[in-house]
Structures are given as C-alpha cells and as structure tokens.
Image (cartoon, rainbow, N blue to C red; front, side):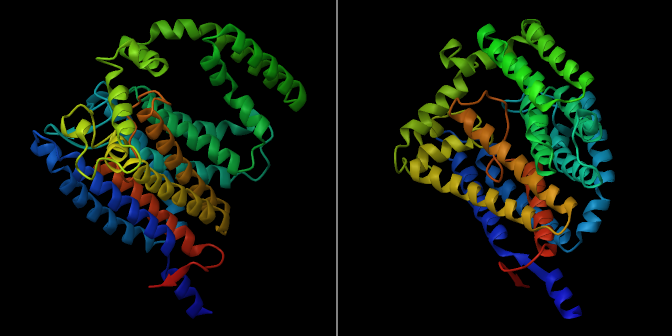
Length: 421
C-alpha cells in the first residue's frame, strides 16, 4: 500500500500537461510573429524572448507546486486571498495602465517598469478561497441568504477590480462565481434570480425587451417560491436596475460609452474606439482558409493591427494561419476545458473539485471574451488570451493553475491516464 501511495504522489496527468505545453508553444510562436513588422521596435520584437523567460520561471513554479499536496493548497487559500486583496487596494493608488487598458490602474510598477497585475493573482486566490468556503458549506444552498459568504468572498476583489476600472477582469470574477456555485449544487433558478438585476441592467436599453424579461422573472419567482422577503427584494432590484440604467449610462466616461456603442456598430467611431475591432476583423477575414503564412500578415506587418502581441493576438493567428490555425487553437482550448472538467469530476473531495472547475471557468471566460472581442461579438475590454497573449504575470498564474490541476489530478480517484515519473 505504501508503494501505491508513493506512485500516486509521483504521477502526472500527461494529457493535461501536453495540452498546456502545446498552447504555450503555440502562443510564444505567435508572440514572435507579432514582433515581425516592417519597422520593428525592440520592445515588441523581443517580447517573445521575455515570454520564453517567463515560461521557464513558470515551469519551475509548476514543478514546485505540483510536488505539494491539495491540503497545502487549501491552507494557502487565506494568505493568498488576503495578499491579493491588499495588492488590489494598493494598485488603486499607485497602479498604471497599458495597451487597450491604458486608463485602468491595473499594473504595479517599479521605476517605470511594470512588474505584474495583482488581478491575475486575485483570480487564482479567489477561486481557492471560494472553493474553501463552498466546501465547508454543510447544508444545501436553497436561498439567497445562504449565499452571503461566497458572494462576500467574490465581492471584495470584484469591487476593487471594478474600481480600477477593469470591466473585462470583473466579468471573469463573475464567471468564476456563477460557475463554482453551479458546480457546488446551487439550483439554476436561484442562480438566475441572483443574476437577474444584472440582466435587467443590460436589457433596459429596450423597454419592450425589458418588459418581457420582467414578466419571465415574476413567473420564475412565483414558480420557485423563495422566501417572501427575498422575492420582493429581487423584484424591486430588477425594477430599480431597469430605471437607473439611463442614469448609469450618463455616468459612464465618454470612452466607456464609445466602447459600448462601437460594439453595436464599429462605424460609429472607426478611427478611434472602433479602430481596434475594425482592423481585427479585416485581419481575420483576410486570412481565408490557410492564412497568409507565418510572420507574413500584412495588417500586422504594416502595424494596422493594434495590440497584436497582447489583446489581439488571436487576430494574428487568423490572419497568418487562417481558418485552419484558428481551428487548431480553439481545439486545443476545448481539449483543455474538457480535460480540466474531467479532473474536477474525478477529484476525491469537494474542495479540489471546486478549484478545478473554478479554474476552467476562468479560462473559458477569458477565451470567450477575448476571441469574441476580436470578432466584434463582445465589447473590447482588454482581456488577454490564456497562454497566447504576451504577459509575464498572466502566464505565470496560468501555469500555477496548471500545477494546481496536476496536483488535484494526481490525488484524484483512479489514474488511467497518468504515468509515473
């Protein structure tokens, strides 16, 4: 039995590791290509070398973390959560912006050099902390009052992120929250009621659509039968959100309003707010089936495509590798999602299972929003593409998540896909 225990501790989830390596290799190659332009600048031209260096550091961190245990990871949830919230508070005072998020105080800098985004650490820390809180929940969650602890865990870093303001990262926190609540067994009607004020805020642009949604909401309240006070509060919150939507719109800064208007019609401001998405669609559309060839994208080489090594790196994939390259990239992400979900379903305890599903939900939101904004299916929010976009802190945290998943997989039930090291 001791020999079996040692073997389980030394096993590794090969498919998960290979998928992450392929995604990272693909991403570094595209960062290299993004730097190949007609009038190169040293910063972007050498970005792939810095990314490769960060990848080396990430692999070392992955090896160290994967040697630990799930119990140690669970213990670290509180310290990491406290540290991340402290850094998010600090960045509000001394933070700087970059790229499509130039107006966001999201980066910590020393001597003018950006050293990382605390929000990236906060995503991981919040996932661990939320998993710990939900795993400790002994009774089934049947009312909104039962959700105050998990909502508080997510709400604190979410408010700090939105204060930067960083809408894209805020969406990721919401995605993590709802995904983990679902995985914890919270009934879907309760999740819909929880999300209803936000839905009312979004649908308030049309009185007819909001009215139809409000009728559906009332029917859902009558059918699900929450506590009377909760039902009344939910209905009132939706009425309030529908009424304050125009006021909130007027409170938005001009550039924020333009980003939302551009999402509906890029031609509203084609030379400024709509420029990014217009050039992205041109680049992806011109790639055709096989693309223009690696490093040969004209939109990229002529610098028409902005933020090509960070937020819009998927556009480089579409232009240079075409539909085939895009399909390969999305297939690798799908494989990552499926494999991570399998790790979550095979975990031998609630905490590791929730952590695994929270991590895959964060990656899913990142991919959905990033790819969507390059195709004008989502507003431009400055959210990176996992394993692809240039960024040391993001790559390091992504591989830390991989390390946590490898540890969870090693301690999960059954090891049919693992080999001993």
